[in-house]
Image (cartoon, rainbow, N blue to C red; front, side, top):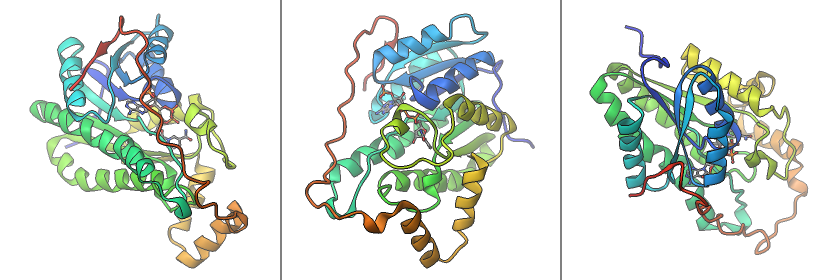
Length: 291
Ligand SMILES: NC(=O)c1ccc[n+]([C@@H]2O[C@H](COP(=O)([O-])OP(=O)(O)OC[C@H]3O[C@@H](n4cnc5c(N)ncnc54)[C@H](OP(=O)(O)O)[C@@H]3O)[C@@H](O)[C@H]2O)c1
């Protein structure tokens, strides 16, 4: 039996981190397809903006103010979406943050913040979303990973680890999801031109426009394959590196990033504490779901 694949006629999409970057572009593309898209994020103004941008599209965007690190709030968000908009047939866990970490100045709050959003933020949503899908014997889940899942590049000790964890989690859960008529997919993009990527201080080869990345993800959602990675000219090389001896890969990455020339900067390289959650400026139009 073919595993379920979401369709706009069946119910609602839940998209975390849909107010900026890849999530915003994807929310609008899904609304163009006719989906009702429940978008969650913390800051209110970008949420309002994406709702406005969807005016006139065949589908619509509904804003839900929620922090993915709030376990109870995420469960309530699922309830609120289902009560007000309909059954969640497709859940896309996209919210993510990047904080660089360096071995000479390890900083626990940076690790915790990245794990809380990128990994537990996904699990916080997965648990209630799957419970709801299980009752209906069908569902479709998409995790947004990253090519940093393929090998530990310098400074990605926290970020890449969460993305690798998402890939393994998706693989492991798939064995059971297949029996539950729940499709799970993982998307591993290369560099995409978004507010997150704009903060990177390193070279980003094959940087993709956000609309192109969203179109690629949408195509992958339609086709239903387990893993999608893009742009191919970058990601096939990265995949190939996984098959090479570690010594060779370490030497290659050191050379292309010129990492050996970077001086250790103990003390100075402490990353600032993770940014505080943006305060919602206006709550008029969206539902705030708290635990
Ligand atoms: N850009 C790239 O090069 C790239 C490459 C590979 C993978 N990715 C992945 O793609 C996803 C989207 O990234 P992006 O580049 O589009 O980033 P972005 O533009 O910074 O967007 C991140 C989104 O996540 C939301 N978010 C962040 N923390 C949250 C929290 N605690 N609770 C709820 N929402 C939260 C943000 O809204 P609020 O801050 O208002 O909450 C925003 O809507 C991430 O998982 C990222 O790791 C990005």
